[in-house]
Length: 357
Length: 240
Figure 1 (cartoon, chains in turn green, cyan):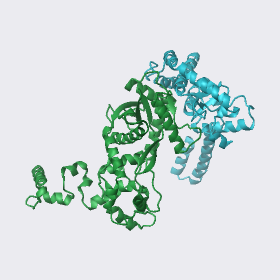
Figure 2: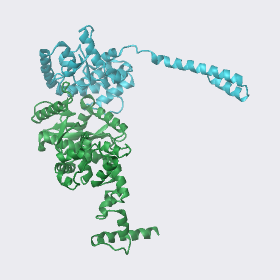
Figure 3: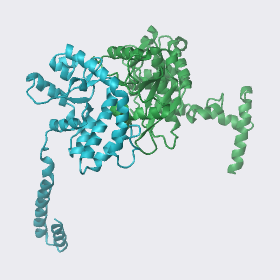
Figure 4: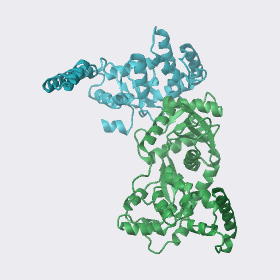
């Protein structure tokens, strides 16, 4: 891992959290993000050095709204949550224990809180103690050799020896339908917690079904549903193992590669970032600090990535928009491996011309 | 003021500028008087101090309660107007007062203690006049306290000849989360809430009381009087 520290140089590293780990899993093919995360580069600072507007991040209103909704669900010993779990999973009436793991007698340190969380969760797993709902556990995850503390605003809850993760989100579920990107973002984040909780109690004791609590329709009343995060867990595990096997990626970088934000000039930083290949997709805009940089790059190079994943996959093998247009023009010479896609593109172009004509 | 404005318009229209200026001065004076007249009532301090208001709400609720709920009860049952922020430093102030002159006040607003570590439970306020077991928070206590409070609010509503719609709405919100307590629509039925909450309370009460008594015995054994009220832990040592 020394090489990663060398890349970061003297600049202090940035801590991971569940959102950043989830963002990593959202775009597994992106080498740029993988290397920057493994080296714990301070990405907001990087963007500032490159003079990009500080436009990225969650709106303070969204954070506040989420906090209000979470407080509502957790009020009075998580009374709303208990009702929802009783309706959704037939939780027996007797199971009503609620423990706030944040109360550790004034020991505010992460280590003490994590120790307390571990102890209570293990006790609960062994059937001791009366806790059903465990609020604000402090979990720990090993990311590229660094210990990352995750402070979820979620609740672990156990039923019949199985633990579940409860994620509370403030986007509405309208008529049993919710915004797909938001649900998958929530699922990715919850998968990080499931993964971390499995480290504590073991694989078999944590359910892959996550309970998502959201406002119902246009009201503020909470409703709950289960979300299967098996797929997200696999992606996450692959991504985390990739971080520990980052050497393969590092070998492709030039010798003496550095991204020390304190000593390099902004021009040098730009060149260094450009040296690591990125995999831009419009979805990055909501998950990655570097997204505006990568988008600009993709637009400048006329990469098809900027048009979205579906277009990119449809154009399999063709990298730039110019190439795609050339290939689509009848009579242009085409390489052998592009013959198939050329035929399809020309067919579509013909239909388009007929329709517009 | 309306008349003055009309007069100003007429004077300006007729070109009597000196008269219009004098009228404007009178209008400004009238507006200033009106403003001070409107502001007067809100500038007065409330009749009951905040700690009395909290005491009143807690006595009605009968269990350690979070600040938000105390404010809601005070507003809908006693017509009080507290802000959440007024309650944040209350516990610390009470602890300081107790430490400088123990027992000088008839009651203190103190902490509820967690059953495991006997540390102050986050965000909850309690009364020093309650028995120690009542101020212990075990795993089941948040639920039993919630049910107890709902029953006590419902009983209070039945005693009252007329209660505000706010009080019924608050009870309705609580009843929504009690099995068989109500559907959350329309005003809550206090008798139904009492029956439903009582039924669930009967399930938890015995185990909860056991936890509480055990922790209370431990607290009485190990803690100094001030810690019995405000909890033990690094925090209270530091603020001492």
